[in-house]
Image (cartoon, rainbow, N blue to C red; front, side):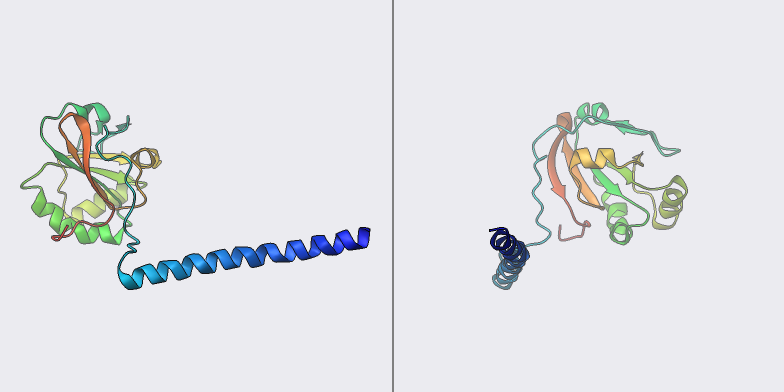
Length: 175
């Protein structure tokens, strides 16, 4: 009996990876099939924060800018674009010329995500600084509360601090 149960256990343990590999293979096949017909978009990220108030936070500023908090955004009567960015992010650098143009039409507030002050300073010096207010999220906790999956990500904040729009990719003229 022990030999039979040992053999059964061994077979069971060998089938578990096979079942897992089959599941992963099926998911990969389904993703490729959806991409072929145009129904799969890897950049389509669910944004549960839309039409909700900004999460509670307070972030220190990056000199000479004042930091800001959720209360500052909730007190606004006009829209503002909040952008999470980092000096180590190549797409962030690529979107800076558009942000420099966009600042003429819409106030931009920036949050430097998991970055060092010296690197932020050098980045903004070379790429330009479109931000009216600039804060630092060195630990990345505020970004997590906002639901970001990486940088750059931008949020259009409406009156009362309500998140009205979210883009989880670099901003382009098409966007």
